[in-house]
Length: 612
Image (tube, rainbow, N blue to C red):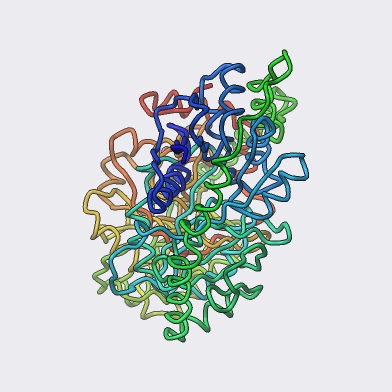
């Protein structure tokens, strides 16, 4: 029997290292001499069985030349892990063509490789003993683990109304770069297995809507090993596991989740059946052993023609093909338009100040209206709602806040000189809800969103302030859950949750844990967050009067906190609702996105900004 070397990229996704470790463990379990290679070296021993897990990462992230890559490919067997039709699958195909045989963890991948002329076999994943975490009480109802795609986010958003009051942990990540161990908010190895052992249901949503559904083997067998009941989008290629016995595939995720969460005995039965199958007859050892016996007899691929394929070039092309550069024509025209819009806004604000001075004797008159309950309230959370021309929506926002449970709440509404009936709508709300502590600050000038938020903070009486736009909503437990997150992390400057997007489009935002590197790539944390009052005061509030931060004031505040060594804490549950609309002030910001990003880098140069 030949020794077995399992190679995986040093700097690749930690998910792939998990798979490589399973293969080594399974090979050891069937009496083979196997070792894991993570030092970046290429396969060199033609007498060994060399398995390269995730070749799309291993070769792309290496610094090997074409000749070395070709030698490695001809004496190794790639273990392909990616879904056909993605650029990552195409990357793996580049070197798989030069290998004597390829393995794929999914039957769909095997078929796609064979269609490209590659001799491929199915390495059906199963459980290994190290996946099994100690048994504990299942205090989580639902867990989700997956990369954030538009399709997944839209599907998850439809479940918010079912999951908001459950014990839920939705862990998402971005595909912009490899995800490594230690990535904030994500779990690998033993930490992941312990999380699954605490969970009643693993929710699986496909990355796209391509049919037939792709069976995510790695995610599935981890959950099965820990007796976690799997609920997934419709799938194919899952044999020998049985739908309805070892997992539940459904087109009605919401209805199925409700049924199973209300039937813990059925959840337990499915989870235990899956555990028994995945660790027993369908284990990774059972599927790997005959493949290794077959590979014992496989010879290296024949010597190539004199000319070595240009692997590095093919890898780069395969990686970049779907990633076209941003198209931003007419740079100067867009800049001129942006500055004209800003100038028009500033002129209008100067006119309003003069009018306020003439009418009220001061250039910044603010009308104050309080509810009966306001003066006697002792709030531990203040919700600051900034309002500008959302009279048709603000009552719904206030109703959602007033329905909050588990906290003592006051609401501060800052009407930033709306031109519609928004101020009157808030007044009517106060009249109808005189038992809710509310104060309306009706400004006779438009000061702009960041200054309006700062005004609201100045009137906050609680030490925790929930920032709300007038068109967004919260579920009843949102404020209490965010406040508890601040209790649990006394050093956190603010807490935020995942948000269900609804309206023009559905999705999930604020879906990832605090990560300064990702924050420097793009703002993934919405303004809807609970901020400690002293953190807001310590850092001077939202930035005012900077036209190159217009519409990005919340991002700039998060960056300022990061630069000062502060952090936010993420609650991985959809507790708020973000209304998507056709137009917003962000549209204006996009006119100058490049210049504004550069300005943020200049404001906070010590942060880990991406190169380029």
